[in-house]
Structure formats: C-alpha cells, structure tokens
Length: 150
Image (cartoon, rainbow, N blue to C red; front, side, top):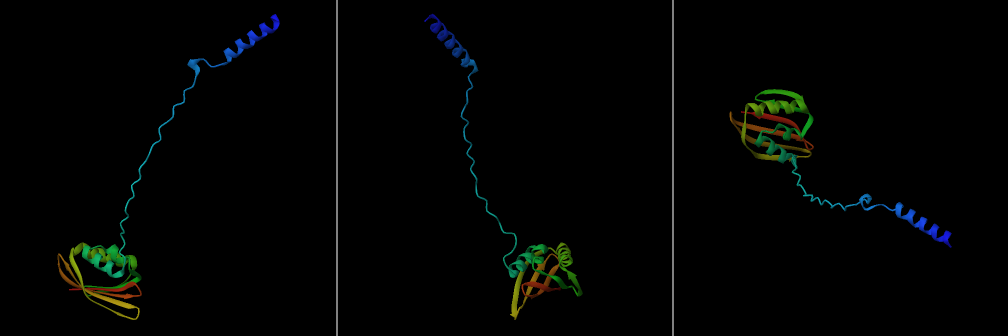
C-alpha cells in the first residue's frame, strides 16, 4: 500500500509541474473590429451624350477634344478660307490652335437640318477676336466637314 500511495504522490507532483504557471499563461485579447464606412461617389460623365451636345459644349468652352470625339477618321476643314483634309488627330490639333488664338465666349446653333444619313449644323461662335460662322456637316454620327468663316 505504501508503494501505491508513494506512486500516486509522485504522479500528482509531475502533473503539477506540467501545468503552466500564471506568469506563463498566454492572454489572448479580442481585437476590436474596424468598421469602415464607404461613401458612394458619383461619376460625372465627361463625354457628351450626343453629337449636337458635343458641338454645343465644345465650341462654347473652346474644348477641341470634346468636338473631336465625333470626328470621322478624315475631316475636311475649311478654316478662314484655307482648306485641307486632316486625319482625326490632326483635325483636333487644328481646332485646338484655333481655340487658343480665338478664345470662345459663346456659341449658338442657329439652324440644323438632315437629309437621309447626313446632318448639318450652322452656328455663330463669338470669340475674343470676333464672330465666326461655323458649319458642321456629318455622315452618320461623325463630323466629316467643318467650316469656320468670318
């Protein structure tokens, strides 16, 4: 009986040593959840919704890029009696140069018409250097000819 009692005491002492002491205990803290509020942003459309709107906005503000969105691959431009056929990118540069030299203050479309798949717009552009008559001819929904005359 002494042997059993002695073995029990030894067994109990070993189990006491195998437990972690209070300074060894690992404390796991529950981290607070971060709540992120996402505010929806509104996306402002930069591109005009129609050819007519692009013409109005582009000429009124002097923004050649807005107008050139609707340029055909080749555009016939008559600028103050100088006429040439330009690629889309060249035509945009010609119009940018014109706007740089003639700062627009207003643009109105005076007349517009349509025949089959061709449309045209005739407008008056008021600039820092005077008033100009603008005529725009389209094929389909693209500008194929632009005339700017005094």
